[in-house]
Image 1: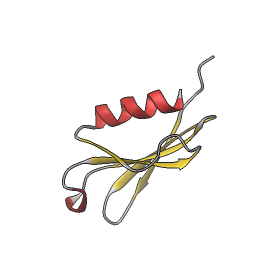
Image 2: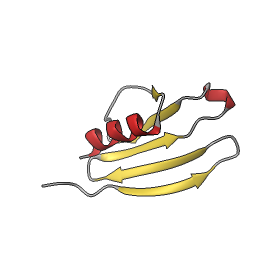
Image 3: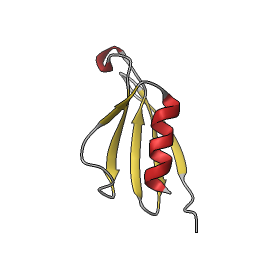
Image 4: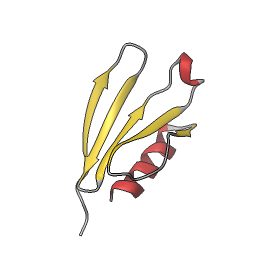
Length: 71
């Protein structure tokens, strides 16, 4: 059984973010800004899916990891 992943977009003062949510938990993907040195960062908001912040050089890599964690 596949869990459905919901997306919601947020515009922030320093960077935009997308929140991904499923029955397994919730993850925030923060788009790069000058503070993040051009890296995409994911944060575990709910579900204890991974230990700490993870960084990726492309949005495709980050979304693949999110898909693996939340499915």
